[in-house]
Image (cartoon, rainbow, N blue to C red; front, top):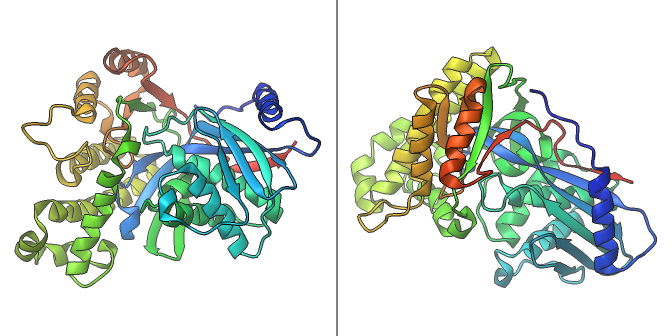
Length: 406
């Protein structure tokens, strides 16, 4: 099941009409930018600690049409969201703007200026079929859409995809106020299935993996469970915060600078100082990082059975140790949609395939690898619980974020 070729003629016509309707008709070249969402295949909360991940860009896209304006404002109207307008005369980060889309646009423009390029005004419209808050990283897709457009508009395409990913991460960290790792941005920027290592904060190690799940007899299914993880930013931030608290207690900045044995040797003191959850999350990091490496070996060797067994082990670690399923489970907490989805999916698979929490967690989406002859029944079963269209079979995008003049 190779990636499909997408004809965007009708979409470009629709976006062009929106551009004229929003900002008025004007002469000038039009720039089409496209950026995919991503599916985290392996590596649940390992990237920000200097570990490893496997991610696949998927054929769910944020698409935008950009037109140079000659003015001093960056204006972007994205379907379903409030319009954004950023003045090129004020590109400084402002905590009052944390969490707003305008902060991402402002941050990226500032980072292009920091590299010596001259930002110039544009008008743009965008739309997306990457669901917001679903765990497919709609935020990274938006960031790479804007970064790819700015690269074409201001830098003549001089910056490499990984550079754009790093700039997008900085914009999200410093201007938007979310302490994300680099996996989402790198996956959207590069496309395909990528095995990534983050030991050196200034240099990401990337190795493409040539593997087709459909050829191996499985579909990659993502199930939206009816909870928006975008509303759980504090819960998300607590994961790296608690992991790094353990690291600091042992004299380093990130868990990747330690070994599992280092943590095991200090568990009584760490529990006393920090509590149990940070310790559990630290141990998850070492368990999951080893599972990433094992899954990379399995995929490279074409061993789907080994991969699925490791994927299920990863899912268990995320649920039990990382606990990114919607917050602490208490007697008063009755809403656990991700856990319900995992339970239903496990029942429908009947011991076949694999299922795990997807992405940052805390609602959003679960991921399942489903035998191709069971996809129809699996989709129907998940949709019956979570609504029509909740379960989608995703194909890998091989192009990554890009922009081209029309």
